[in-house]
Image (cartoon, rainbow, N blue to C red; front, side):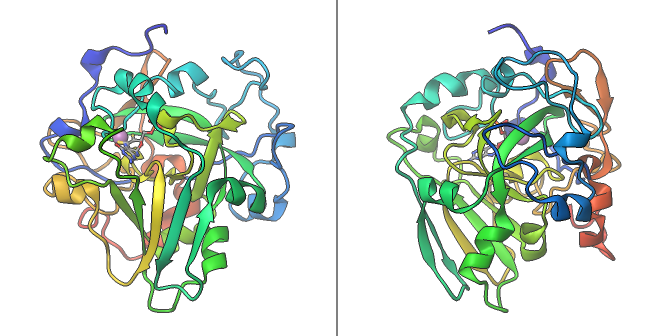
Length: 325
Ligand SMILES: Nc1nc2c(c(=O)[nH]1)N[C@H]1C(S)=C(S)[C@@H](COP(=O)(O)O)O[C@H]1N2
Ligand SMILES: [Mo]
């Protein structure tokens, strides 16, 4: 694989010394013959998304020649497939980003069950292959902003988390959603390091979970996810730092109180629950004002809520985003 970054520019999450900050808008549905991409015009316009037909894209040719060039709503070209699948954060396998793809080939991702319960009227166990048939899959081109100050533009395939939550019918006492990743130390060498609170856990408030930008992804570039990207099912919350977008989900629980998460347990002084991308909250060592787009040369400005502010800022009305980082 060609070199897509300088490793000297990368500071892994786990050696961050201080806490981070927080962070819009702009998902694009782009058509593909495989996908039901434009089937939700009402959702598109409700949250300001551009339908594929209005955004044909004319960027450079991407790694998968069968796919059309893809751009986000700002015109940023999607990151190349080879970069998205060879530069990964997945601590269960390795903290070394370029090692993850190779180490993760032994993870068996089908069949795969997801147990959904907690404060719900209809607890259910779903098979992921069945979920993919049940919900119509859409393409969402989102920016992914890692707290390590690099970013990518990824054409995800997936469906809104809200559709799944409707099925299981949260009780009125449910305020948060807790997600858990697979625990399989025989296959995942990183899980033998007891310094981390395995399994990986993440959480969202119920209103964040129900937001139309929040999806469960099953693919990128019109293909099923590879293990390194969180196959077979991962969360994608584009206005938050990448670590909120938990991979390889096996369990989803509706809960009353804000759950502890992998990172808030591991390094509480550095990681907050909300983790919204926010360039104005400086990190003591690593300012979050700029980021490096993988595969591109210059640093670019980091946008409030990763550019999705118009769509999500009302979720945080009256909330101090410095206190609730
Ligand atoms: N289970 C699990 N999910 C995870 C992680 C992880 O280590 N384990 N890393 C997170 C981080 S820090 C980022 S930036 C994104 C990276 O996703 P990608 O490798 O598909 O680009 O996944 C997130 N989800
Ligand atoms: Mo990250």
